[in-house]
Length: 474
Image 1 (tube, rainbow, N blue to C red):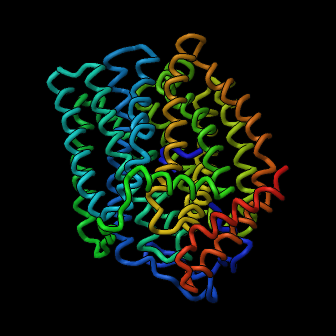
Image 2: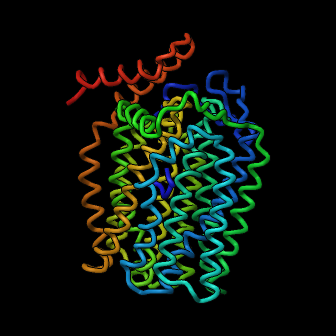
Image 3: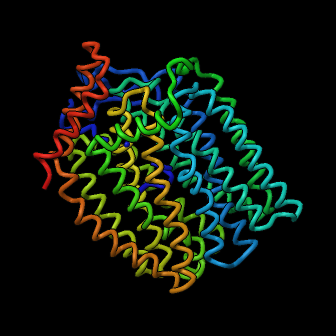
């Protein structure tokens, strides 16, 4: 699993498309057009460059907070459950507001949502830093601010994910997501966490001041985009509840997306149970200081950067089915490796491989979800998807702290390894080549319906998916 990935859609099988050859050039401004000869290129475009620049800046901000946040709570208390609880309260808003945020994103200008919400996040982080600087911060106040940050994240993440397929050609989505995922891991996990830990060592409030400045810069960069989402006219809107139900029905009717979402929910429960106590694990089990804790995240990001670079080639050569199945094995092995080792070098190497796996899996899932979902439903389906994924993260964060506190710091890792092995066996067949072939057929049917002007294209495809369930079950 990828971090919040983040965090972290359905299938775009490389085997079905012309290969990306060694001579193909890919830059931030362009990407091969898989519907044309390999020398032809589809522009990612000016708007994508502004979005990418903003993402690079805000991911640096998030990475600083990723390291400084747990250290700040650990500075206030040495209780493992309380430290893990900080991650839990930041994920709870996805359970409460994720679906509503998705519906609102489908109604509003997605670019404007990102600008306003990033500015609001800057204010919240600034308040956190001010409270830490004045010595007035308590665990309860930190929890409240983390909760508000998590609430704003439901809007900005849904808006950002839905905006990508609006400004990028469908054929370019995998490359666009590779660029976005690469900068997410580099900023969020490689560069910024060691920086955040180092700044925290200089002054407790310093990383939060840097975080605030970066968040403001990320919002300002979005003003460079020319694209504006067309808000849904008020006369065409139904109730928020009806719109949420519509998005959920569509997502649940798509068998592959449903399988991915449920699997990722369970995988995130297990992953979050271990990462929520990683700061304690790194100190007690590996003997690392605050800076060493940041370096563990850096190892994860280096692997993720490598994974994002090679993901298109891997997808073309091996296909999505094999990549996901190998990923299930890697995820299982990661938990067992961390449970067994006391060596920082082994733990770092494990996270390096895990990072590469997470990036490849993320490119596969996100691109396919964006390809499969109609634009008018991107926010709602994304919100439903993230509800399951982030909900799993919230539950796992809570469980991990209590398990570590009550039974020992390695128990969450052992339990996650065993549970992951069971899950991998259960979904192995569901991620076979036939599932991805069915998803591609659904995409083709939807595209044909749109081309011929079928106003009920979404419903037709959904009904076809439901009809396909009966003869293929078992």
